[in-house]
Image (spheres, rainbow, N blue to C red):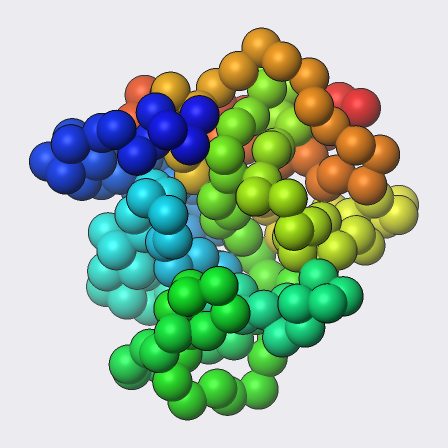
Length: 187
């Protein structure tokens, strides 16, 4: 699936990324006053530039994930202001880091993925950073916390099951074909 993603031409990658981003902007929590986390793309992931631009136009506060401890798979979400620099694994991070915001207080988290199955189980890059940061979602009772939306291309969909017990499921998936919602009761 990573090879399929990488094989897209630059123009096709950009067009598909814009269409997937447009699907995310149609969500009710993508509006002024909300706090959303968006990743900064790495390894030909779906580009988030259109989402960042749309968020700024609408007055949405944008945060980005930053790996703060590689050994223990820990990351935090920092406001995106100004320029970026290379962080862990060569992933862009804010040059100036303000105070992080815990993920439970975000309205929407847009998550990269390598693959996704028909019920919203996400295959990531294998580090477990998102699963660890969002572990609280597996133990919640009434409060739903942030909405988790995978951002990908249709070529990243798979019928294969690969979930582990610690994996946190997506609520929705945005691709160039639009938005797909998953049942919260899905194992």
